[in-house]
Image (tube, rainbow, N blue to C red; front, top):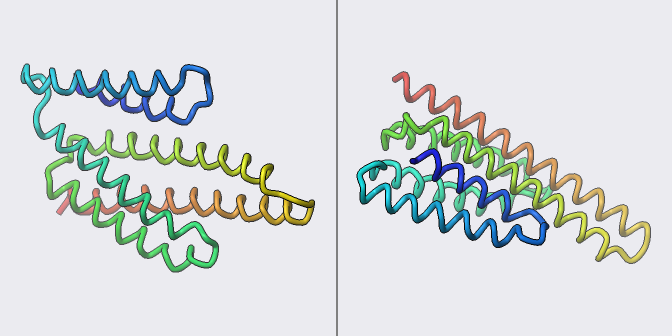
Length: 176
């Protein structure tokens, strides 16, 4: 039952960035269905409260990660913010062990990676529209395209640093 909830959450996130005619409805329906199944599973005892706490843990982590990302994607800030991503990844690896979420570790990596990929795709789509809309001449369009390419590269690198740091730190703290 918990796997169905995780799948529906991934589907809701994926459909949230799609531009299809029914994507927003599918995303909303998937999210509500996941919530309904989660509540029914908790009532019937098929889903442990630990799983619900894990889902809240993921949501809080993604929110904090996105707040860090807001300041990191400017080229001048990226080199200064890499240690923050590394420290945050170590903290999350430690907290996964501390809260005894080790049985959900693979799900954490899958869901977080899925969210980061969806976020990256959404930024690519948004940046393409921004580049086309805001460019007044060829020089400005070239500058915007270069800035967007750097921003997307920084997004991808910071996501990789974060995921790798979480994996290494979790394995380190799990074996202690």
